[in-house]
Length: 518
Image 1 (cartoon, rainbow, N blue to C red):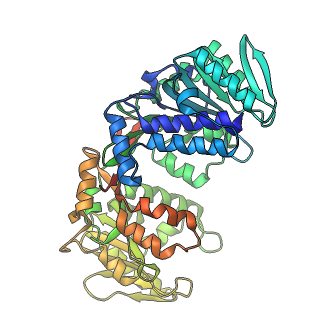
Image 2 (spheres, rainbow, N blue to C red):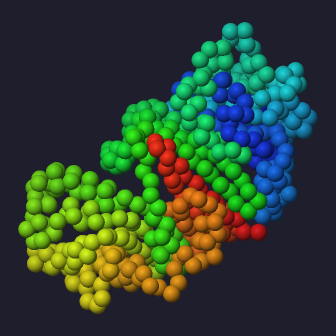
Image 3 (cartoon, one colour):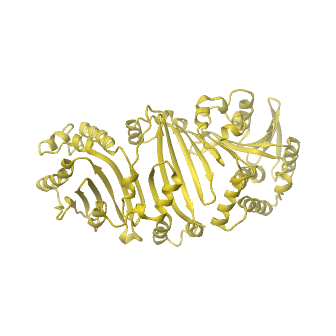
């Protein structure tokens, strides 16, 4: 029945969730997690039948982005059109809407051999089980493949012999499953232990945002284990250095639409003693005014020190023996530990309108004049060591540039001035990161100010200017990429993307907001 009914219910969740809703976090909305297998890797739940301000906001967004009055109505009409084309007519208003309950969910219990989520179960509350059963019976009759009826622990279910998908009623809940095994797992969960009983899930989902349209729970540690612990060793080391144990991490994302924005709130128990925190918004706001994207972070020096310690201990095979990096630079007056300790915030900006003028730089702030002076000394050391292509900078900024065929037309530049260090591709781009007294900065733009306001008390850490980013993309993407160009009219409605983060003890929170123009 995947050809009609399971594709229907999967889209019903999206349809009704997009079309209505005034729900809160999924933990308080229903007991659907009680039908998800214990240890489920992903569980998403949302409001599918409700009215209120949230429904009005979704419709307002749909009108601004796509020019339609009702997103839900549009999706339903497309769904019915697809069913007609398959000669399996569906009347949503008669066959589904009368029994569709308030909440819907989908869960995934495992990863398949290709690393894709599998073992799904689609869960929909019903207000009229008899009407739901009538729909199942009707769809079984019109299904082009034979449908086989079975029973498990007193619960009847129907299997499409063509693709082995299964549907049935468990109590007052419609369940559509990937296969009989997944359906039986839902029955076992309902009659025994379930995801909803697990304290890890309960603690995570309790952090879902109030007023959300839908919430998604992810067992990050479970995904890592199911994938064969395939997380990149370097990434794991970086996370652990920041006090994060990914093998124990969970996350919950909440979708909250507004009349002129789309907000995604993320809360994660990072499995560490203390979640990283900080505010680098002042540095972010000082990036060049024409940046189409920029991000900033705090605590860069601590992460750099850890990386340098590891590099010093291991060395570089064939280039640098172990335990020689720090001692060698110390002999010429550069204390790497002191340099790393003096570094505070870091930011990256990108700007340009086409491939020929695309560029950007990494910008670091430091509390030490000695660190700035070390940049100039490092250039002299590289030149005296015979490193090819190294040239000292002239002017107010100290530093050096490195040219090579591998780098292309522009050199790699390392420059320092005042309390800033910039590393970039090309002199002009790099020096732009040092301009602390520029007449106009990113923080002066209207879109950036709107983004900061939208984030509220959450410090902004990343910003994308919608029109500028899209303009660059249009200059780079081939006309043969039809999917992108079909999306352009909708992407033009994006004013900005803002991301902010914060922390409270072991819990890290993040907020992403997409501003939509009227």
